[in-house]
Image 1 (tube, rainbow, N blue to C red):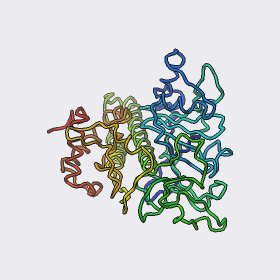
Image 2 (cartoon, rainbow, N blue to C red; image 1 turned 45 degrees about the horizontal axis):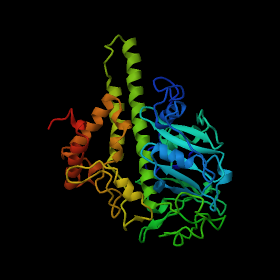
Image 3 (spheres, helix red, strand yellow; image 1 turned 60 degrees about the horizontal axis):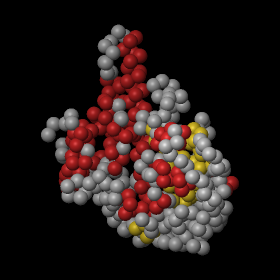
Image 4 (spheres, one colour; image 1 turned 120 degrees about the vertical axis):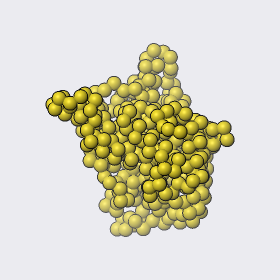
Length: 426
């Protein structure tokens, strides 16, 4: 399906067992969804929105407009890692477009547009939209094909996104025997973007993008110099069929962070709900008060909440050794979304010199997925976040945050998300 995202290389991080999310209390496949695509379908059926098809891209342009996804978010995948793999190659890459909540995949002459969107409680929801021009177009929800890849150890055992970096041959075929890599803000620069086009500059740092393996006996022998600091894809592929000529390096970095951040939010929600559900069963069996929370449930909630917080505050982030600059309007448009405090600061402000963001706390803290975390879990995460930012929590996990970092993040959140600290002592 929309295999945006990652492959399996742990980098020393734990691999999560798959959660039985089809059972109580999650009921992933049978619960009614509340996501942007489901809402759009209601509007289309009611005549309040209309999908327009054009000759060059089918429903793509209209769909992006209705989902409020900007073309500048375009990134191009040249590996055959999607279910429409026969239509994908280095000369005809797959295009991906995204915002904070939804991701859209498009291939030239494809039968469908692929969509991964977000239900704030259930996590990633997958749809396809037929490219056949239809007066009443229908999004079809996936019933199992997508989550074969999108609900595994690669996504922490829950339905979610994955960004994969692979060694590919000249035809775009992944060389899985040579290994694949998980891509997020913790990933080494040298392991990123195999099977992707990358436009932008990054100094002396080198990645796996823009090149293919020329030796089938030694796929790892890439000409990384040829793929470095590419600002124009001419000669590598014809970009005229796409909405922009870019596969922006900054957009790629944001995509990588965001997909795993959403996975951590979903995982934390699932684990917390399971803990409360199991407590409910045991409370009834042992004749305990219905609202009794066991020590084991508290530990489970705290453990997954701490994982979420570490990722949200960019623990273990790869440190850039050269400035990074994209080629499209993505960075400017992304930062313009705010929100900003009275000093004009935003969690969306980029650094791109030593790290990705100037103020290292994920902008996904503004998402509905964060707002709708179960109460006990959210209280734990927010309480510990507050302790970190006021300097009370000085654990090694957050040693990368300077006093100035903590102060700035606290001030930004206090002004732009004031209800966050409702339960905290001043």
